Amino acid sequence: MALVLLVEDEKLLRWALTKQLERVGHQVYPAPDLATAGAHLAAHQPDVVLLDLGLPDGHGLDFFEANRERLAESKVIVITATREVDEAVRAMKLGALDFLTKPVDEADLVALVNRSLAVRSDQLEAQAARRSREQWLAQQVVGESAAFRRVQEVIEQVAASEVGSILIQGESGSGKNVLARRVHALSVRRERPILEVSCATIPETLLESELFGHEKGAFTDAKSLKRGVFELAEGGTVVLDEIGELRLDVQAKLLHFLEERRFRRVGGTREIRVDVRVIGLTNRDLHAMVREKTFRNDLFYRLNVFPIDVPPLRDRPEDVLPLARHFLATMRPKVGARFSGFEPAAERLLAGYPWPGNVRELRNVVERALVLERGSEIGVRSLMLDWSAESEAARGGAAVEAVLGSGIAPLETVERELISRAMRATGENTTRAAELLGLTRDQLRYRLKKFGMKGSESDT
Image (cartoon, rainbow, N blue to C red; front, top):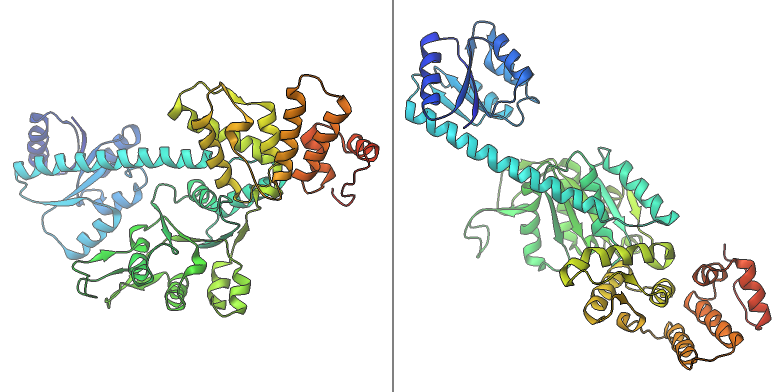
């Protein structure tokens, strides 16, 4: 059953349409004029609106336009004596679903109302799913460090703006894709699609078609028309991952699109105008690529309207444990809820590791540990962290475990080993090593002097 607002000034037709719809179970509110319809609309949200155009107190499309926001979740069907082209175009631009031409056929009326309900149901489900997904995406950004808080502040500012081109730069695995999704999730475009294209993985010969689409017969394998991501993401966001991998000729076409917001499909002659926000992601030095003439200077500055630099994980060690706990919480349901967290030694190892693979590597380590661990807490062994220069810290940790494993050890030996491990893991950075050990910097400096060890005096 649907709530139908019927706006029709002809008394007999209004009565007949009401009876036809009530007969199949719909609830109908008949309105003879726009004033009555407006009063009903102020108190109720109709599922379907049957709207006559020629009414005693105004034109139906003027009413539609004035109440467009209120009718956003309703399906509007226009009733008209004649299909005037101008009126049809205006109605469709306003969002009308279809037309009914007088005299109205009962079967057509019922079928069209039912189709309207089906379309509305699908759209509401899609909106709910998209809203849920965007809320989930917005929650995936985890970070407590000052450096990452600054990035989040910039993300919130640019998301709320009308900036159409954004460039997010950072090392591989640093979370650029997640931040791009957060920009979309926080923007007014969040109800529209977000589509991602990997410029590095799609074959060069197909990338242009992927972005701009192609006409049927444009090339040998173009057996049907294909709409590209710019067209499919109308009103939303397109994320171009590894944008530094674009060929120069595709760069030229992308530049034209960013400047004009219109394009032609491959093999096409008609220009298509769309409204999308473009977010470019790269782990490459585009400044150097511009100097080497492998990336267009004008495209770089067009993309660089709002640059966002993502710091690597090693430069924000305060975020390591919150991220690890976040990954543990999100992955735990897949493997059972027996894991309560990380053992203290495992947390110290996570915090001291330099994470050359950034957030992606941390996520992979946690996922692997969930498979390997047999206890209730993730231990050092399950993390399987081993590295070359960094393995000094691991070897130090193993030495500590060996000493402690004997059951008896001089306290000074254990203390020296722990300090040595912390200093190696942080690249001799006194401040970060002190944080790992739970000491103040002065306390650590005292112990460094005591054991004849050196630390960086320039760190802050």
